[in-house]
Length: 216
Image (tube, rainbow, N blue to C red):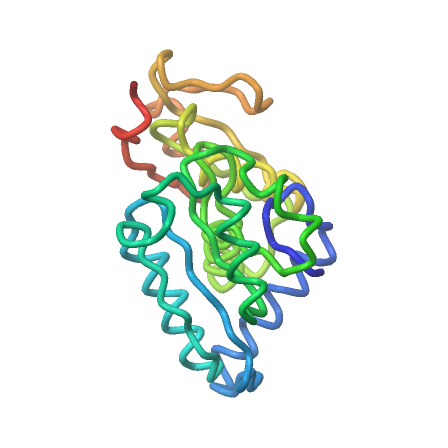
């Protein structure tokens, strides 16, 4: 697997393998050494948890982090995302972590030959957050098949909801949603329920924040 951009691009076997590897790293405290590898984090949207988590992981892997600040980069002069990434690749970056407001931004970058890790694309996908949620569920239950899970909140604008729905249903969980009509997204096949009617029937409740920045 060269890129991590979308949960729907991962097979069930790949998802389970990633969870297993992450659990081993967490329990054993021993991680691969990537000394000598260069990586850049390109965050075109605000972030605390995701950005700092990546930076911590990169430090633990002994990687060299190339500092990239969108506010002082050539993006402010009109440089495209593609040209920015091509520049970082040409000076020696081995991988890029990118968060961007454009859904599916990564499609233009996949042929460049540099690994892309999607840290969130518009209202599209958030695969690393989904993998973290899956690992948390697995640590608690030890399985996914047959779990009843309800996702509540701003479903329409949530990349986390979309990634989790795709991964959880692929793993055999039963996923439903709770949201007012204006926040519903019927491109996903899960049913919409009233919270009071499902709260006593589900194993897991996932709560999402309101995506104010996407409510144009």
